Image (tube, helix red, strand yellow):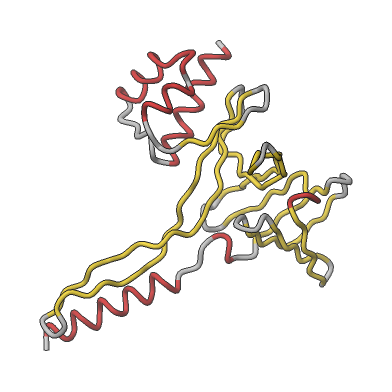
Amino acid sequence: MKNLILMLLAVWLVDMLQAQSFPSDIWHEGKLITIDEDTVRGKIKYDLDNDLIQIESQKSIYTYGSRKILYFEIFDEYFEDYRYFYAIPYETSNNYKVPILFEVLYEGQLTLLCREYISTETIPQFNSYSGRNLYSTFKLSYNYYFISKDGNITQYYLKKKDLLTIMKKRSTEVKQFMKNNNLKFDKRGDLVRITAYYNSLLDA
């Protein structure tokens, strides 16, 4: 009986994880600035995979692609904070740039950007009836980018060596700052702190 209860609890937990809502699934209060510099206010839902947003305004729902957007902001109850997104030209293939949506995590001489996505994670579960089973669940993940003041965008693949190369002007100080404050080079909040510190050195 105990093993059966544990198995049922494990299945319930996986179902709950799979059913959870992510920020991109939710309507958020916010505003949009179009490329024609019109301001639209209402509830916003975004789709970074396809670089689209929907906005519900005056009882109608409008869809905008990244080519029609300058900027939008939302209040995200998931994070309990405001979030800011810009459509920035980015080289996708054949040296051709198209505007895609980036979230700005920290803005300065070196700006930290990101694009969130939903990744799949496999979780092993064990029980005496069927042995080892694998369940898939989903989690919120991020791709990170840095943009320099001259507009060059570099994707950051969460390697410490790459981070120090990007921040090579003050890499020694950045490395010591990370050590003193036990900061990780692959954690969202820590990356924001590291980027803020690096910019403070450039501004000094």
